[in-house]
Image 1 (spheres, rainbow, N blue to C red):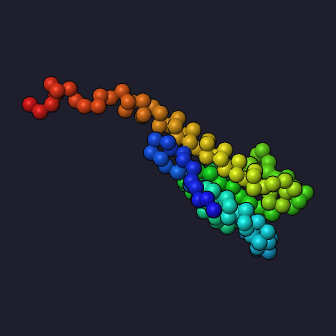
Image 2 (image 1 turned 135 degrees about the horizontal axis):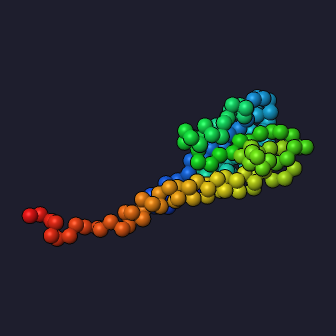
Image 3 (image 1 turned 120 degrees about the vertical axis):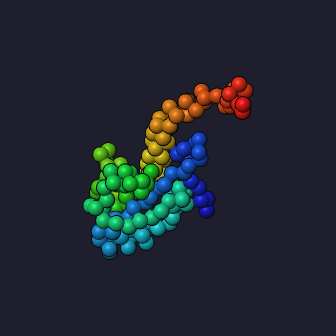
Length: 147
């Protein structure tokens, strides 16, 4: 299996911190989710060198995850039933593994979207410093050297 990481800072080659959360508010459903979808979860873990954390979906807050640098990109896997949608526009990180369509493909694309967004933010924040550093002279003029 391929184990890879995604770059978010191309200047310093920093990689994205990726977390796959699994809802454990109902232990029986969580166990079944892991049995039914364990291989797909392992593939995603390998592709992003992700961590897997279990937690109650009601207690996971997106703002807290980002502000405390727990993850640059993350998804929450939930067994919400076959009659529910794969994800919502309001909460694209919450992925229903019971949906009729391929949740693994969606999760891969969602994590990539978040990683690209993080990389863009880092570039926007560091661009002024990078431009300033490029305009500074690389060495002092000889007249300012040792006296």
